[in-house]
Image (cartoon, rainbow, N blue to C red; front, side):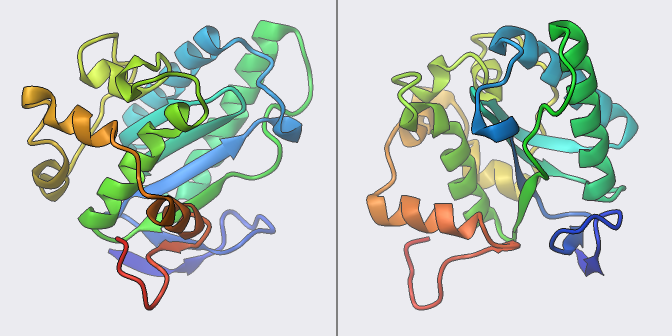
Length: 218
């Protein structure tokens, strides 16, 4: 359930809507919006290790993770801890270990992470599809299942899955009647309409992800 508004560890950013049951869409960008200095294969391995640590120590439930050349998308639920605590640990650890591997110092991420709370399983399916289609929109692959730095590739059995992926019963009923007959992959590979994609993009900029009033695209 959603509890009171809490500041994220006193950081000077918008108050965090705390939920122990609803998923967040979270994104973090590389410094100056440039490409990450650590090459993607090693960064993906590092990302998987850190996500597994968060799953084990903070009980974070990951629903999707996609690493892009200059940013990270994650959909996750934090049932026991504050998202601010989890993400501070995540970003600090990724930065420290990435700098150790590259011999660099300084920031890896360009500022704070961004989040949006997803309030229904219907919205969840749209956000999930939006995240998994990100590499296709960026012309990094032709099909969602071909992108190597995505948990989807592990879910379809094409690669090692670096972190456990978790879905609630309602999410499973909506999203994963599953990869049987490739129906789900067909759905993921079918582009959104321009109107729907723009609405999702705008919705993810809000603290509570929801359609704009007066529209029914979602």
